[in-house]
Length: 336
Image (cartoon, rainbow, N blue to C red; front, side):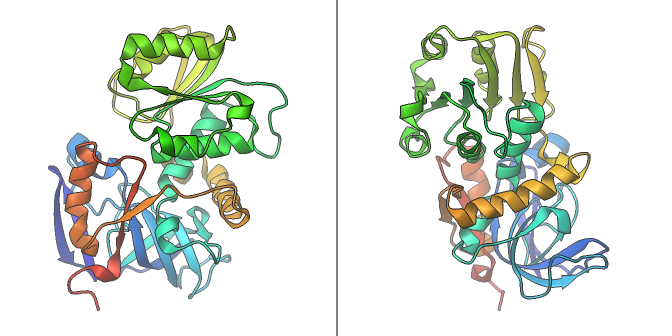
């Protein structure tokens, strides 16, 4: 099979590899569409890894391992591949654990499904496990101001949708060029607002204070976690507030001690938060079916795996605005 290997640069090499076999509790998926994430170029840079970095899978179950009870060959599924392990989604076939695999509703395309797994799980983990906010089945009954920084990103956009389902308002969303995308997701009637970070840090801090309207800001989801984002938030969050961040291997010591800060590592869905991952992937599938949860807009990159190089360069250079780059594996040269 064809497989794309990503190294520092980013540099992408397409190689021929054996089709993997699923182990116990694993599913082998014939990948129709793979999604991409910023970590796909960042991890090779940060830790020097050379690996198939794809983690967002959408396709057809080909084989199931021992103990797999929920899936069978032929099922349409999406899955979150375990990060930094072999057999990722930049290939004709990929491996996923059954607890991070979920059925795709009939009306959801493979392209849409490939835009979901890693980013959507990051949003759910951040909101509910790290910030401790009310979950959708026990929604908030009183106002809870929540700042979402990077609201137009996939993580931010999914956080908005989940917060809506949890009746968390007002949502104070920080965005830039893609504010129009955020506008489609918020509810102005419940006090939700959009603030433009491009006006500068000082202006943003003042606008955050105005948006709070005298209420203490106790929760922030920083889906950017760089370029001054958490420093701006630190200037407005109240004593005892919680902020969750998404970038690992960073020094967050500049956040004041009176603010509790947590790293949302989506890899927890394969470790200490396995039960959470199992439940929420199935809940998100229900949200797709019912229509209240929608995938981030997708851009299909030409050339299948041959387009991974350009897509990762675009992500590195900040060219992806309110969009998920996805790859149709069948478009790859040499794939029948």
